[in-house]
Image (cartoon, rainbow, N blue to C red; front, side, top):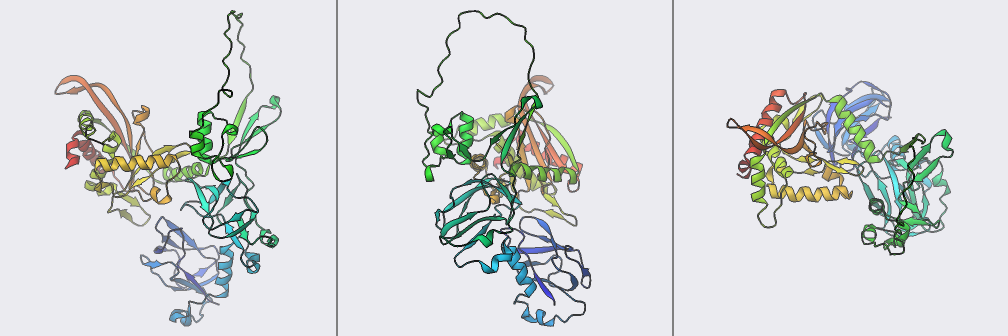
Length: 536
């Protein structure tokens, strides 16, 4: 019996897709697992595989065509089978195979989905970012037996990009928790079950498997040291009295940075949970402050120092963000042929211009803002640098959206300034400051970290004079910005004190040739050395 295959929803925000390339043609034999086509979504180009065996009888969307989700993509069946009825509009009703597939996809407990009691809702690990493949439950804000209302926050879930609150869309009682705090599980694994109090859900829990990997840090001593000590890094901390302290991940981090004992902090959040404001407003009492040591008046005897100790190591579980960074940068470094171009920019005029600009009321711009603006203007004059590589085509981005790399405790994120070339320097400064603050607080949305066409990475504030970066794909280039250095320079045949800054452009040689990259840097240099041209 022929099976109708519709345009799949391959990302959480996908509404339509483009068939970038068919990897099979009409009449080909198809096996389960074969890649049918490459489909371009709003986030990426992804391979779409077949879940059926048979012959490809019909192609509904040709290469390069765009179609909404659920439109007829292809039909697979037996060779010579009559599919005229499906092509004449009878494809709307799902075949039995499709119904079974829908049941399997909708819930990890598909075998029992047909017997889900009335009013019971099975909740699976959500896909909270476009690249998320698994998630870690950082904190449960509800416990089994609690009443849950629509809109209540159930848990904080750590994705590959941020720790995000996950709210309930249902009313009822929390009957089951499938993934404990600190555990990691793939998208669509059983997360929780909500329903009327007292409902028998034992059959819904059977056959569900989640990762048993808890979020722990193992501090292991040498064989001589004896026992192994395990310290939990989950968002719930054990108090000295043995009771559990409920604390948000951000509040826990702030407390660790400030050296605050969370057992002494009173929480004002739900169920006494400690939140950010509780830690920031905490003032230690006099009694809890460490007592000063007594003054030592005698001179101790000098002893010969003999090095002694034990070898040890520490294993820290990689966060979702760390794993996503590793995948993304490894893919970029190993697939894109990188090369690097470096120039030294005279920053004397930029320093003078910034000083004048910052004398205006309520105005404060950084050198990084000026660099971002110069890049946006240079990209407009050199569109080849504002491209993306695909196997069959080079995508010329007509818009300019610059990503600004921001260091966060767990790694690196790249918030994006949409349509940067339409923003002035002051607007860039305001937007970058807002994005950077929310990036460090893990408050950025996935949309705010996607869609860049070029990236700027600045380590000048750390005193780094020159470095190279890995391209943030699908961009073709990334600019590495060093520190402004005061040093002797030659001007008009005389050695004088000047201020210079080195910038390095990493380029993907598949899209940006050496001469093109050099011309871009020349234009960028002209803008930075003559900032008045950026105000025109």
